[in-house]
Length: 82
Image (cartoon, rainbow, N blue to C red; front, top):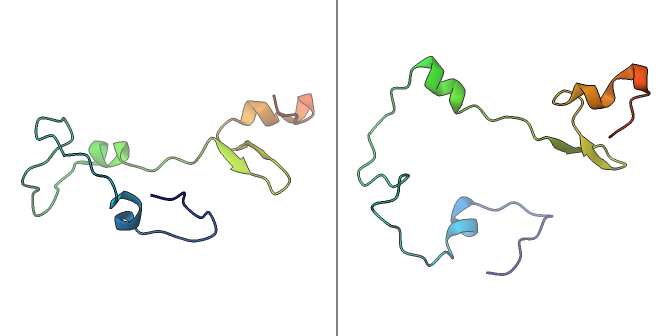
């Protein structure tokens, strides 16, 4: 597979379709017969939440997200990245 072009979007099939390795049925994440629907309790749903990235593009540089690591941006120390 050629490198992905960061200027365009890709489907999952385009990204993973070229993988040629066999799927091992004894792997922890292998599901031979997936269920029609998943009935998850709230705790299980929380575990699946997407978490924001640690590093973000600030437009002028790549750095830490203020919401994730606020101590890095603490105003009393000048908001300097460390």
